[in-house]
Image 1 (tube, rainbow, N blue to C red):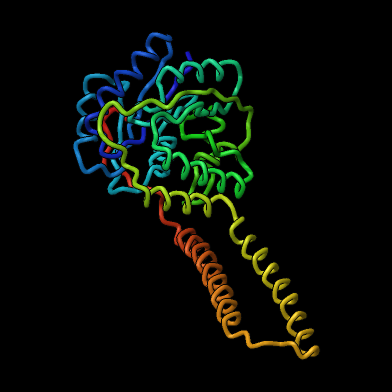
Image 2 (cartoon, rainbow, N blue to C red; image 1 turned 60 degrees about the vertical axis):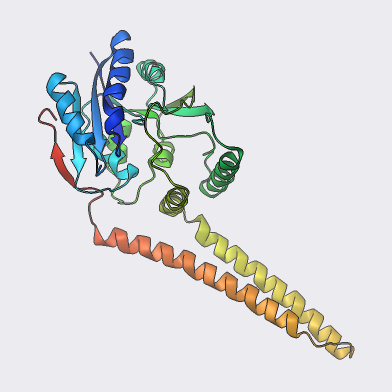
Amino acid sequence: MSHLTVVIPSYNEEENIESTARAIGEVLGEANIEYDLLFVSDGSKDGTFARVVELSKKDDRIKGLQFSRNFGKEAAIFAGLSKSKGDCVAVIDCDLQHPPATLVQMYRLWEDGYEVIEGIKSSRGKESPIHKLFVSIFYGIMSSLMKIDMNSTSDFKLLDRKAVNALLSLNESNTFFRALSFWVGFKSASVEYDVQERTKGKSKWSFSGLVKYAISNTTSFTTAPLKIIAVVGFIMVIFSIVLGVETLVNYFLHIAVEGFTTVILLLLMIGGCIMVSLGIIGHYLGRIYEEVKGRPRFIIRDETDNL
């Protein structure tokens, strides 16, 4: 019988571990799907891993590992993929905002021969209008840069073992799982779901954390920002030529006037473009530096005995 491994990245989710394990277990058990749950504690500072260890002693299908520190959700996902044993592997959030019942739909599609099943948000749940606006702008920019529709995508996916092995063969340390699942190809399908409300605890994502996450993942997956620099530079050259011609014409027609304010504004605009361009280039250089060092994506401090 085919086996499903469910990877569950967890950061300070002590109060959700048991309810999440029970909810997923009940859904998969009723569907007669053979499974195991792999909780990845991303350097949690509470009793997340201790709770996983406690449950693993009662149920051999519950497994877990603990990072030496917080390495981020991307690292947690790839650690789970590397330790998974299933014929197919699903990734789901620990807060149950991804409905466990959707796993059954994904699994049935996998049985039909699909190798990458994407969870697509049909609604985002309860969010403030301002938050929805920023999210819409953010994903709109990312979609245009990456040439992938990121508006409704999530980390909620089910992958065939072939797709998992393809992802694990990638050598880069800076990864973006949400986009890489599209990049590897394979026969794909999608399942829509409604984002659920958290039953316990608060979201671990802050606005600054989301911005950092966006910049990190965009630059790890695409060089589009570097190309934008070239486009902006070309536009500035055209603008300079037009302004230069106008200035010469006014000079020879003896209608030139003092333009101190214009000069200052131009210097500020050009200087700002240069500084932003240097910042983008510097960020990519930092990425190259991180990749060249060859440090591991994560360090595992501890594992449950049954892993």
